[in-house]
Image (tube, rainbow, N blue to C red; front, side, top):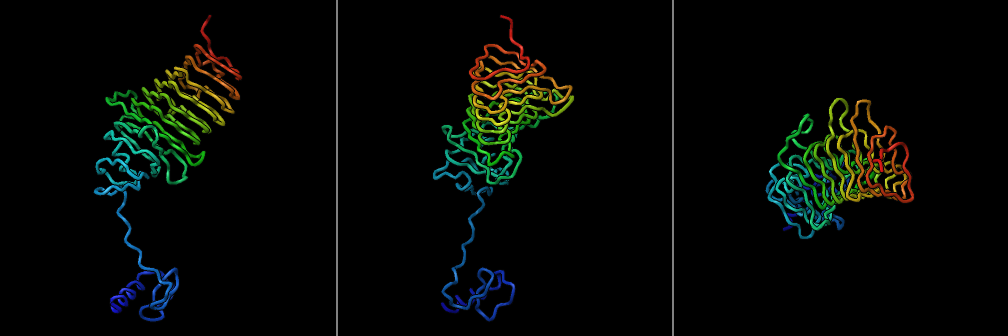
Length: 320
């Protein structure tokens, strides 16, 4: 037994990192220094690390951070987020609790990304800036999108680590965000390209800008038909919604802008050729720094409800 241990320590000494050679046979390199054979401070060898949580054959529950996760089939592609992507493509619910991922989590042509009972929280494992979740389609960027499948993201909570991160970045068409919460981001939802987008019953809270619709620049009509229904935009420090481009933008079904310390809704072309049309139907504004800034009179209002706020700069109202 002594001979076996001695040989093991000799081999171990050759694999550790020390700046000077071993003083003699059997000495063990530990924490950058050498310990003699049999020294009581010698730690046992570290066992081999477990397989990667996203290996192709053996997914690990560490990825989802849940004690009893419900696992999707083994992922078909490698990568730090392969299990989550595979679950989204197959429409398999993520388990409740914290789901850690490496940003960006790029979801392309998915079926449905859905949490369990609205208690699944997507958390980035790094404070690096940029989009956390990117939702796109293979036809994104085309002038006309005829995408046959509606992508669905439902029952998910996203928590940014700082204001340099974007919660959700959309670059595609025909998708629904349902019961989604985005907290503490630079931009909660950023739409670069979007056709036929529905955001329903969702909460955007304590973001620098909750909703950012700017498009991709002239001359492309890159945002068309985006509807926010029953949403709550709360606690934004700069804008609740900043719209610089987009046709057929609708806020309705008792969407609420409340407690935004800057401007709740700011509508102004991002460039001279921007096309913008915004309709507010039965929308509530409460306790914002400013409710609406609309210097070009691009907003049409039906059934506006206000409390403690005020409208500035020429939003259009239907004649009584």
